[in-house]
Image 1 (tube, helix red, strand yellow):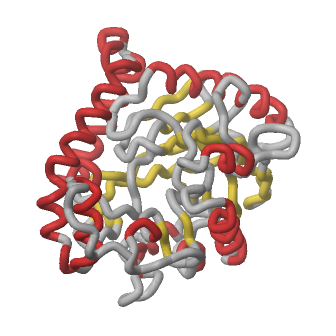
Image 2 (cartoon, rainbow, N blue to C red; image 1 turned 45 degrees about the vertical axis):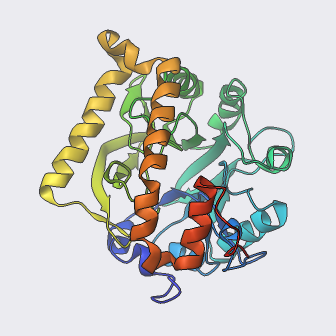
Length: 341
């Protein structure tokens, strides 16, 4: 992005995004140069250029969630600089802690409709105490009450949820239970994120649409499983979701999301359908088991670690030898520290 400009990452998908009146995303990191040292990987991961905030706005984004487990990794100063950069670009930020409740609500009028937002995270960064004070960190049971409080003040209510296990294609029963409680309290649309893979969706009570995981979008993952993704699109009319659909995407070798080709698109939609079937089918309840989700996540993490040395070798040209070596040394700590800092 420093070579090609801050709009580079969204260049292949911006035209599609600009078609939306409301375009939502989860900012899984910071957009700030505070504390940045480009010779030290410990200051660079999950960090984007401050100018990317304007690139997001110019590409169509209207609302960004920051309630997640990475926006607080560099401390409150960098977190709040990220929020300032997003708001300066004209983007609404959700995911901050409220004064009298867990989530600070957002209400915006869009084409005559009052759209309400609440955003929550079940997971925070290593700076746990600071994150819990600043972000709408939740245990889950308190969310239905806050949804009910906002329900009568808006025409349409969206809840953003950072939840679940990473790399698991089917949401666990615990996540499904929270989602159903949120729907029954009055939410119209629930948008989930955190697992890094697409999960299925469902409609609860004939009204609330729940999308359990939106997968990755702009993210420098290299494994094919983590580069299959999609946009979720819908129309809001008469206080309900109409025409819900997924637009299949792939993340290319330059880590840009782009519209998937026909064969890839069909496979992505089949994956979503498979996960969707597993969400409520009694015969597939074993796929929703919480303990199973823990095991699947752990197994995938082990596979990533086993292949990462090969990936680092292939990425030296992109990262440079210093950063690649620093990442390698994390996996092999007995290596000398001669390229750190």
